[in-house]
Structures are given as C-alpha cells and as structure tokens.
Amino acid sequence: MVRPFGAHNGSRIYKSSLLLSTAHTHTLTMADYKSIFFAIDKEKNHYITIKDLEQYVKDNRMNQTVVQRWIRLFDPKGTGKITLESFCETLGEDVDEMLKQYPPTNVQQIRLIDREMSERMMENLLNQTRLAVREHPGDLRAQAATIKAYADRRYGDSWHCFIVNGSHGYFYSHKPNHSISFYFSDNYYFIFCTPLN
Image 1 (cartoon, rainbow, N blue to C red):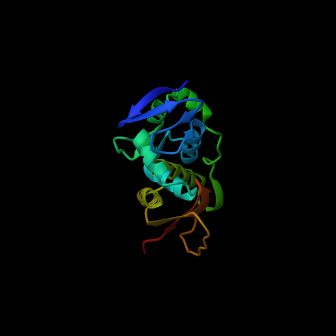
Image 2: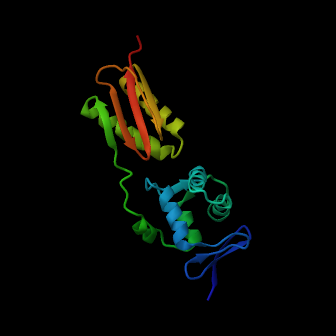
Image 3: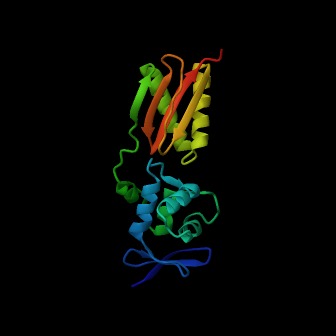
C-alpha cells in the first residue's frame, strides 16, 4: 500500500517500503536520504547547507539532479539550509528518533600535529576553530578569517591561519610560543603569529 505523506511545490511524495519517489526523478530509499544527510552533517549541527550538499554530490560523482530534488523537497523557500527538523518533517520521521540514528563519529576529535604555545592559548584557539567550523561549514576562507580575527583581537600582533585539505608543504617563521597545527574536520589547520615590528 502506497500512501502520500506530504506535498511540496506540487510534487507528491510517497512512502512505501522506505522508498521516496517523485514524478520526474530516480528513486532514493529513505536510508539513502538519511545516509546523505548524516554524511554531510559530520559535525552534528542538525542542519546542512545547499553548498555542502553540492560539494557532497560532486565529490561522490552523483547526478546533479540530486541537488535540485533536495532543494525542492527540503528547502522550497530557498534558504540555502536544510534543518534536521524540516528534513524529518518532509520524510515523516520523528526528530528524536533521527537524533538516535546519527552514526558515531570521531570528526569532532582534533589531532594535534605540532604545538608551540601554552595550554590555555591552545584551548582557546581550538574552541574558536570548532566555532568557526560550525558557523561557516564548508567555507574555509570564512573559517580562516574568523580564527585570525579572534587571535588578533585576543593576543595581539599579526596572526595567520591557513586551512588546506589535500597535499601540502609549508615552511614559516613565527613568534616563539605562538604556533599550532592540527587536523580537524577533514582539513589541516596552521595557526601562527608574527610580530608587528
């Protein structure tokens, strides 16, 4: 028995044996939708951005129609963001049940590469990095700008933040006891300070 459980922009969505189908697209299972959402929401922010979805589709060599389908189903107002609540509402899922289904992840873990700074300074910069990743998911430039602005304000002099997500080499000089590098959220972070004079 197939029964409708929602309608968006004239498209009727059906739920049957965990299948979702729209009139003009290929079929994805409920598990597929959840897997994609969970894979993108690695930080467990309970939302994903359309930009993150586009990157996921590109990285996984999926058909670009997937993005349009998700926008039509989960972001019909064009906000650029799909919240867990709207995702669950469209799929007819309970938010609390979905929260229990989030896969365990160690992405939240920061792996230090090198550190030459006080424990307190390190904790402050790592917390600021977590915040920047939450506020600007997928936007490395905005993350770097946020981290740099914080460090400049908090510690003075001139701070630098480089974020890279592939092969890299680096060589730099820094003020003594003002440098840290680590791996977090699939990226390498290099944060260091140079004196103004």
